[in-house]
Image (cartoon, rainbow, N blue to C red):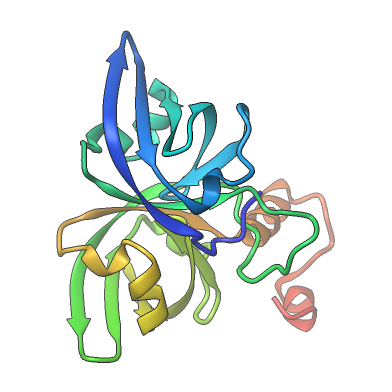
Length: 210
């Protein structure tokens, strides 16, 4: 479980491929402080397991199933990545509940940038857009963000200066892919409606604040 609050930006030092397993060696600093083999680390929003580490870097493996749902198969040396350790039970919960399971790939189709703001329009699948609401939460490359606006085939995110400074999102370009994970609460709600085994109605959900 993660919060979507990026702790630091790491840099891929090595990419090793053996059979169908891809190993990324990532240089980092802050997240190495209390690291253990077997820890879960969010790398651009994908939950990966630490298999080795030293004082300068750590290693994670990307299996075929993860590659198929992410762009991690295309990550090369010197690529910067968003990093977050699994959520601690004794700290503040600053973002929203993030599982680290990438739902889909989005594509950046427009960027409006000024001195103090950056609005990015991301094209997404209809199924994922159906799990979004304006002013709701979305995870983009592991970063917890608010949905600024919704369109028929896309949504907008608004990056404040701090988010631009502390994540890789400010380096994105039109045409780039991004990892998307929708709010887990909407997945539960959607599943309830699909099962059709409850008297829960749309009106009741609105009354509860959904």
